[in-house]
Image (cartoon, rainbow, N blue to C red):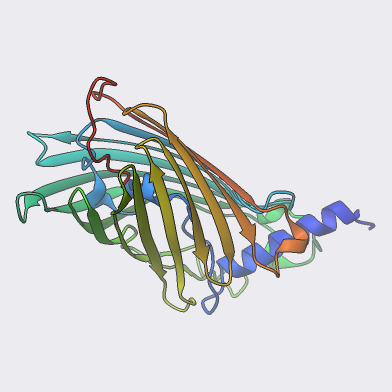
Length: 315
């Protein structure tokens, strides 16, 4: 049977992703990765819930490795709000993550409780719980039909999960640790060698950032985030953004051995933020794609354009 070059490229990429996903000794993109994570922390750390002191909604879309068939596409919606005189917070996040034959859907609810460490420093403690749905369409791949490993799809429907996090913040800095997926999950029923699938690993996140005034109307915002996964190499994003006149921002982010990113954003008003990031792929991936695009839109209810924001928090 003849297979077109287009189909061969898709199959090769899909098999590579499946191989990454289900091997215990290599890293896989089991959790979505965001270049503009600082605008979407609730998806990573439940302790962030309600810390914006307003009903906050975020839409984020990421198209990774554009031009490559089967490349990851992630769409995320999150909303959270403070409660009880801002000592608690409730939130939810919905994530659709697709790559190759893999189609994942994550729904999480989060709760956070906050205590003042000092007058301006707050510690938030958060929990999240929800349902995950994993689907790997192996049967849709155009491969050798005699291979039992690809004879049927792999699916785990509505797996319950939970996680927790800590988030320490003030108007000038933040630091957090989180384990958003506490329970590891196996795909397949393990009744035969062909169906024995490996475990979807826990991801442990560490993040921090702070503000430095570098002029009367300029603020430098360095930050970083690390992902720690059993059996995976170290992964981190190191980012520096510059905020001008409390309205315009631009920056760069570096993910060692993976990508270099450019970030731009605009605070239309105290309620609305629009941000965009472009990732230049590593040298190994550059010949096969046109980079990655990510756009985020954040809106906060209850804040008016008449309010004077002396030091707007972008985290």
